Length: 212
Ligand code: FDM
Ligand code: MG
Image (cartoon, rainbow, N blue to C red; front, side, top):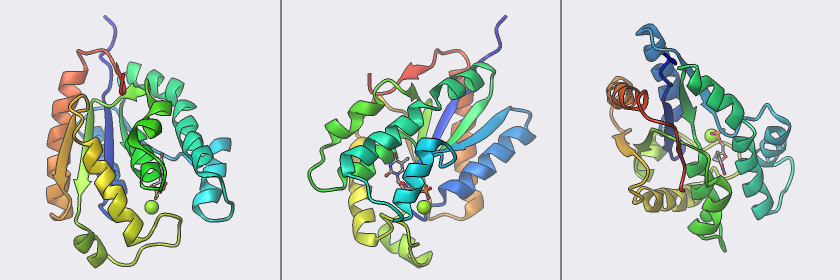
């Protein structure tokens, strides 16, 4: 019998919500309970495309807005063969940002609509679970200053938050909103229970296609 596939689990949220910390904690917890799991993050800044994106985010280069949107999408597509291989091997992938960040950040810029922004990512492996780490702008501000990278301003992040809220209305995606204002352990417990549930369901289902 073929081995059961892993689940594709995505964490999304605005800056300072704790995505990276929680992705690491989740992978560790899954591995400790004997479930194969690996972390991925987008953008993956290690590839050739990822390096172009990284220079843009660090403001070392400028790129036209449509162009950078398509590069973020291409950076996901270039990793799809690897993602599918790992999922088929029974490895659960815990992903720090995915196409939802892609759409929320670009559509927060003037002149971009949600629909145009979604198109390049249509057909990507569909996450079995997308957890949105919800944190109000006021609570985010209490967690300290924003960094120096592009998009790291409270005005822009507020618009991004609104775009995520629009995306979360889509019932074709398994969204779960997590209260990221709780303590790190409470957030971790919520995330783990949703993830175990998704892993159990996913193992008997084929991988879907996003927004298709
Ligand atoms: N971002 C991330 C995008 O604009 N589009 C995307 O498709 C993705 C995946 O890049 F500001 C933005 C979101 C964030 C930045 O920062 C990446 P981190 O700290 O590496 O997650
Ligand atoms: Mg960041």
